[in-house]
Image (cartoon, rainbow, N blue to C red; front, side, top):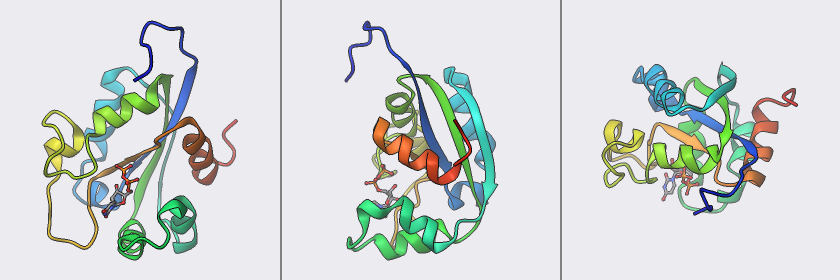
Amino acid sequence: MTDATAPQQTERTLVLVKPDGVERGLTGEVLRRIEAKGYRLVALELRQLDRETAARHYAEHEGKPFFEPLLEFITSGPLVAAVFEGQRVIEGFRSIAGATDPTVAAPGSIRGDLARDWGRKVIANIVHGSDSPESAAREIAIYFPGLA
Ligand code: UDP
């Protein structure tokens, strides 16, 4: 964990409400929780990903058994891409999102409160959030290339 008392630069993170979240009508609930925490929305778009863009986003998982199911899932319907800004927003959003596996994600987190195991080949866990400043810069450039 970062030293919470050290001066922090404002940073940005890429958040996705994945197709399961959009399909279930949870977009507003997800955005509400992030805004209520105090982070600032700086970009927002509803879009349908093509396979090539999805593979670019998840390049680090290429070759893993869940890679193909993940591409199918993330391109299965519209998703909402957003950029949020604030001190330590990358770490802060991952805390709001909760653990990858929604069955054991902490109650109070988005995944812990709103998702579970559905017996699918892929973990449908409502949201994505960048995991480092480097990932955030790379991912924001994929979804919002015009964002300075
Ligand atoms: N995923 C999956 N099975 C796994 C691991 C990951 O279906 O065994 C999916 C899941 O949707 C996850 C995404 O791939 O959110 C990216 O995985 P990562 O380990 O980066 O998790 P995250 O950062 O999203 O918590």
